[in-house]
Length: 238
Length: 238
Image 1 (cartoon, chains in turn purple, yellow):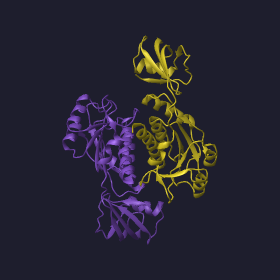
Image 2 (cartoon, helix red, strand yellow):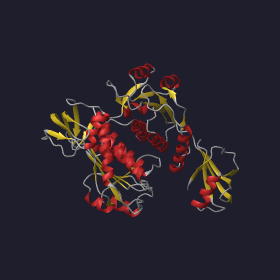
Image 3 (tube, each protein chain N blue to C red):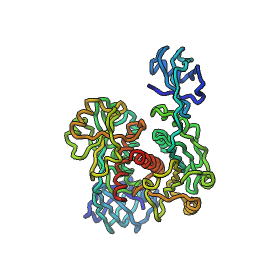
Image 4 (cartoon, rainbow over the protein chains, first blue to last red):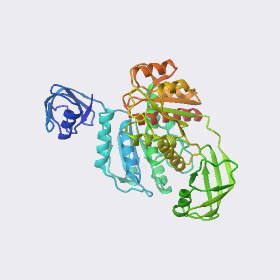
């Protein structure tokens, strides 16, 4: 069943009035009829099931049949990443991280950043489309862009930094298994500056390797999150 | 140092004449001069280092200084995947698989395929750009599109199928560690047909899970290859 999104729904919503765009989609694309069921989420774990009681291209309504409030997953991945120069690559990353189920994304301003501004609303739209597509009930939190210094001062989680400088690094896969929440730092195309790496390490960040490849920034972001996800999956299955 | 690509270079190449496009890139973008060194690969593991002896926008030459013939990696991943309807998504996948170092990609024709033709030359161009960018010396082999039946009849490697039907499946991460070469089957958006799954299983394919998420086809393709890569990385580091 198709999943729709409405940020305003709560467990108390009895009657839901759809936006114009969703009314049209239900009526024209999905050819739903009055009496059919629809599934909505608010992106905060709510799965709201309703029955269509009014349906036209402009305005439609459903009444609640049932709901499930999903628990926030214990295992949560937070990615802080310098946005790529090419915005398409960043938008691709937002989609893929959402499919994976990443909890939050923080665009980082670094010394070598090629992009200093991001369109958060656009990123949120992409994430909403992706939760609908991949049938997820949690929307990743997309934070405003901040400097790496600000980020380091406000991060609460065990932090891993995948920088490209030489030095002792362990595999992220082997490092990330013992934490419920994990934060990952991925730098811009020109890597973090030596100063930024020093600052991160002084704040307790653990330097890690993603493997021998030379990944693009957005690839490294996805690969890092997928690695942490797999480490957790492996642990829960062993 | 920037890496260039020329499929015709061998270990015996003494003098290399560049294509017009590369001459221009060397002279105008990289501002190279006569006497500077350049690095080329043929995509078959050759790392050819030369000194520029003639440089103009139209025509340039380098003479060999040194070369390394890299060994074909023992661990090789082969992906067979139904191409996505949206060609951009497929092109993105080709780039990402190349960054990861996948050995071969076979576009599959399945019962539910939304795309029945692919532009191999375009895919190869993307893969060439990606090996240059990620500094790799092996170009993935991109095969012509074939039916899943033909594929199953000619595949030599331990085969894992990530279908979406219910049933007993183990985690790909735990399954894929004991093989040097691994082949992966990823279906179209509407999944493999029951008949295709039956056919694959009868040929010895092992059904596997990539995790609880509902991935898009191209995401599943990348996630599957990255999982096998990580399983191998973990094994070689333990």
